Image (tube, rainbow, N blue to C red; front, side, top):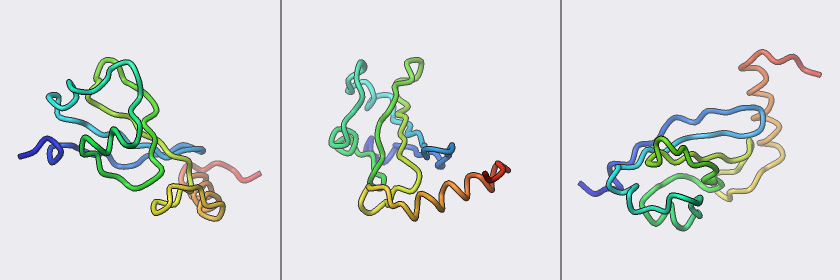
Length: 104
C-alpha cells in the first residue's frame, strides 16, 4: 500500500468565515516534510493529498506535525477554488441556521 493511499481525511467543519478539514498523513511520509513552514498547494498535492480546489494549508500543529490543517473561505467553488458570492451567502445562511444565530 502506498503512503498516499494511507492518508486520512476528516469531515469538513466550519465557522462563520471558513470551512476546515484536517488531513492525517502516515508518520513516515510526514517525516519528509518541512517542519517550520506551511506547504504550498503544489507541495501537498505532490505528496498525494487529494481534495477539491481552494484549500490552503494554514497552520502547523506542533504536537502532531503529521496532521495538516486546511481551510478555505465559505462559498468557495470546489471546481475553480474561487469564492462565489451566491455560494458564500448560502453557506453563511446555513451556518447561522445550524447554530441558531439570530438574523440581523
